[in-house]
Structures are given as C-alpha cells and as structure tokens.
Image 1 (cartoon, rainbow, N blue to C red):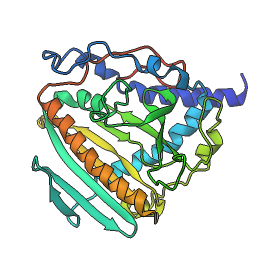
Image 2 (image 1 turned 135 degrees about the vertical axis):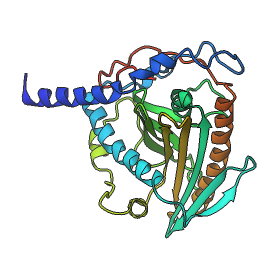
Image 3 (image 1 turned 60 degrees about the vertical axis):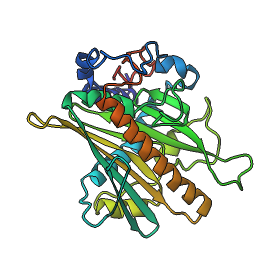
Image 4 (image 1 turned 90 degrees about the vertical axis):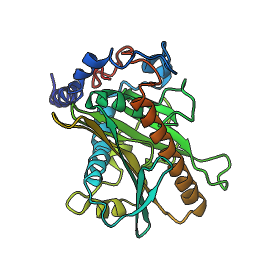
Length: 309
C-alpha cells in the first residue's frame, strides 16, 4: 500500500467519523409522523434522483470538504456575533430581521426558535432539502444539482440574473450540511466557485477548489466576510440543552455588492423571498405538518459519505 493511498484512506476515515456523529437520527425517524398533511409518502431517494450527477472521486471530495469547511466555520462564527449594532425590521409574523451594511457587504440575519428540542433532527432535514420533486415555493435550496458527492456535499448550478448575459451565465456553488448531535451548519447556494467553464460529468474540480480564495480566521468574522468579497448564506441550527426545550435557528444571508446593480437588487429580492419561505417552513414544522416522511435511500458509491439523515 503506497503512502498516498494511506493518506487518503486515513483522511476518509476522519470524514467517516465526522459523518457518523449524526447516526443518532434513526431513533427519531418514526416520531412526528402522526399527521399526514402535505406529506409525500414515497419520496425518491437522493441518489436515484441524481444518479447521473454522482461523483466517486474521493480525492476531489476531500478537496471539496476542505474548501467548504471554511465557509461553514465562518457561518458559525457570524451566528455568534452580537447584533446590538444591527438595524431591525419586523416580519408579518413578528419575527425580527437584522441588517448591517459594512462597505460593499450587506448582511441580513434572521433568528427564530422552534418549540421542542426533539424536533432538531426534523429541522435539520427540512432546511437541507433540494429534492427536484418538491414545489419551488417550498424548496429552501432551489437550484439544479451539478455534482453530488454525498447527501451532505453538493455542487449546485444557478444562473446570473443579469440580462446582459445571453444565454444566462451559469454560476456554481459548493454547498454542504455539517450535522452533529446538538449543532448543524448548512451552507446554502451563495458563494460562487471561481470557474468560467461548465461543470459536467467529466469536469475535474480538485485543483479548482484548491485555488479558491481562503477565508481569514485571525480577524473579526464580519471583517473576514468583507474581505471575502462574495455572497454567503446558510443556517446554524442548535438544539437546546437538557432544560431548554427549543431548537434555535440563525439564518445569515450576506450579499456582496460587486457593482452590478441588477445582480445586487435581484439578490436582495431573493433574500426577502427566502425569509418568507424559511418562516413558513418553520411554522409547518411547529404544526407537525411535514413535507415528507424521512426515508434513508441507498448509500452513495462515494465511500467518504456514510448514510446520514
């Protein structure tokens, strides 16, 4: 066994340990399913839906995890920032939306709670949902899957809204869900991969991930976000403690103004739309009106990704 293979194998074992931290989900699979309102009883497993997009390149998956991990870490740091100097606005449901502009960066933030810590797994499942069979107005992640490494690591494809691009320019974003027993961070389609080509089955992305701009972590997280000069959106979901029977959700959607007024305005409109969808989903979870029953599906051929919820 050569040294390179050993290093890859050890790295994959590390990922396996990280993914196994979410095995607790199975014990809650049957709860909260007493009401069949709007539930899809027979959802198509992820790896059947996106069979043509599955990647078995483990080295590329490792590079993808390393790259996306920085964004997830920054999201978690931003979720801990005090919002005392943010402006506020209220939604129709009386939730508070926080906003702060620093230079060209427009940071939006929504904090809310869901009663009953036992719903933590359901919250994590529902906010990381990109199944093509769901209606767009219910999808939190509404984008085309371009590459699927595993259930928790996906490249999504969207289009630049600027009408000057004919045909519309494709934008790719690597996204991930990092679930643990009491905290989960989810990176939604936002930070664009700096890549001018089209991603298809044959596209090799290992070097592309390694060339992406790194995030600085020895400075204030808001300052690091400004220096990143890119969009960043996602969730940080926390399960309350023993005597704190709640699930805490923070949604951050930071938009970078790159000088393209059309794109910036469209991103802000989309952010407002996301706030509405997110809160509507939260209410459905509170009311036990789930979108579909949990289903395990079958394992990805990529061994770095073990079965998770």
